[in-house]
Length: 124
Image 1: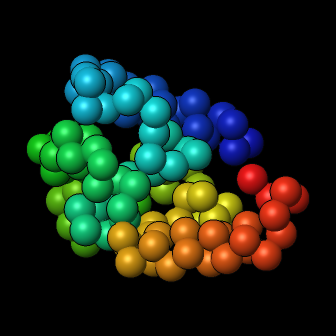
Image 2: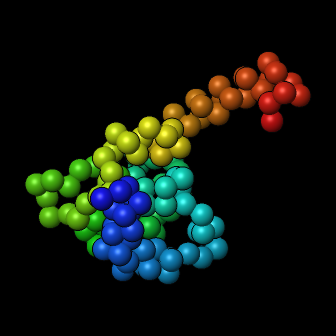
């Protein structure tokens, strides 16, 4: 089964969860996703971007769905939808999918600001 076929199967299996995510959207939730892959959601306190979506995090808790990177083996949790279609090692190959704490993001922002300052007019 190709990656795309696995992903489609996961979307069918988690259709109720994905519909509930849509229902949580309001003015606090811009409708975008915290990561490039819309099935990725990290546990509260693990990722500054995911922490901007507390309703989605609560929905995972309520529906007993594991958070990305938290594991579900030997628990009563359903797998993280992102990890159901491919292993975490592949998910995290793209830096935009990796959890970053607020402190880690602040360090990355500061490093980017330093680069922009060193290359004025070249970097945005």
